[in-house]
Length: 354
Ligand code: ZN
Ligand code: ZN
Image 1 (cartoon, rainbow, N blue to C red):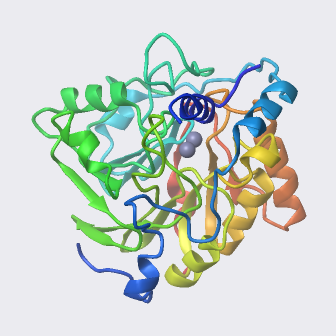
Image 2: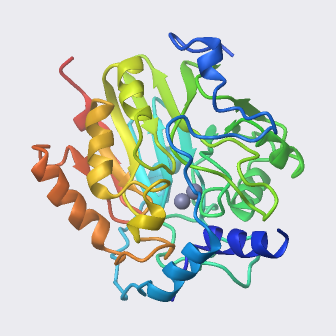
């Protein structure tokens, strides 16, 4: 039985050890509701992971081991990506790692390009599908956004390699509140730390941290001590939302109201089974479609699937269920798409029409 590393390790060890602008319309007191007196954070609408150790044992006992699947890795062209200054592109490198090239700026989300989602190199969830590109093959990165500190989203080895490679021209990195220290401890200073509904300018872009429904932890002692977030990246003519890791919540209707229409969203579609255990922190494909509708996106790409075995659902099930849920909701073909690992899409289809 394979288990979600973060939940298992942390719950087991717990048992053993016992800017630019602030919000456009959210008031100061409302905006701080997720800050708890002990310095930790909570979700706005749901307490998220509140499962007991007996719940964990129940999942462990009854859980499924997903069957093997052969994912086709798309052939990539690192040289094109390295030289590209003209085309707007989107490349899925696996899990929640996307490379976005837009108007000559290279952006990467939750970069994870190594073999384990774990604090140690010899144990923990092993990568099932190889990354679409190695760190060496990446173009020079200008901007990194990090959603939270779980090991499948914040990978020390990838971050270190990236910053070693770009020692003369380090990328700017945006992180949720209280996560800057982790980078400073690695000797990385070029970090912007934001609370929910705070924003900061980056060149021609405005980068906003926004609330999503999740939690954080890297050790048995730090649950929710650092914030988690989604990121809205906007510049003239383009607005992108990276949802990171999230369950379904009212946050998304609020986000839709706050920003109006968006062009492209990256929404997690995997990590949902068993539902009784995962629902509060991971959306399933049906809920991912609800998020897509709530936030009024033109296009969405499904992420957080087919890369690490973290939960019980079959590895190739999320895109199948996504297709069914999208059809049921009347979402047009290709409006909420998935990509092959390593695939690059030219974002011509975003040009329109407004
Ligand atoms: Zn997570
Ligand atoms: Zn995750």
